Amino acid sequence: MLIRIDADSATAIFDQVAASVRSDIVAGRLVPGDRLPPAREVAAALDINVHTVLRAYQQLRDESLLDLRRGRGAMISASAAPLADLAQDIRALVARAAAIGVSPATLASLVKETSA
Image (tube, rainbow, N blue to C red):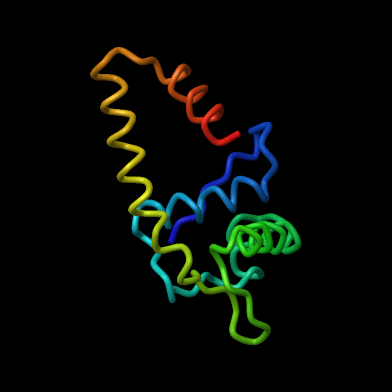
C-alpha cells in the first residue's frame, strides 16, 4: 500500500491520507480483512504527525471503511467490499454520459440533485 500526499495541496493532510486509502479500496488494492500499517509507521514514512494519520483512520472508521481495534490495528472492514463494485458502476455511468454528450460537471450536478 502506498499512501500519497502533497504537502503543497490546499487539502488537509488527513483528508489526503484518507482519500489515498479510499482510492486503494475502490481500485481493489485493499480488500476486507487487509491490515493497514500502524499509524506511527505511516507518520514516520510520510514525515507527518501521528495524530494526522489517526484522524484519517478515524474518518475512514466513521465511514465504515475501517475497523479500529486496540492492539490489533486498523483493518479494512467488510462493509468496504461494495465500494469496488460501485466504482465500476460509476465508470459505466461516466462513459454513458460522455457517449451522449453530458459533461462531467452536468453529471456531477445530476448526481448531487439526485442524492439530495
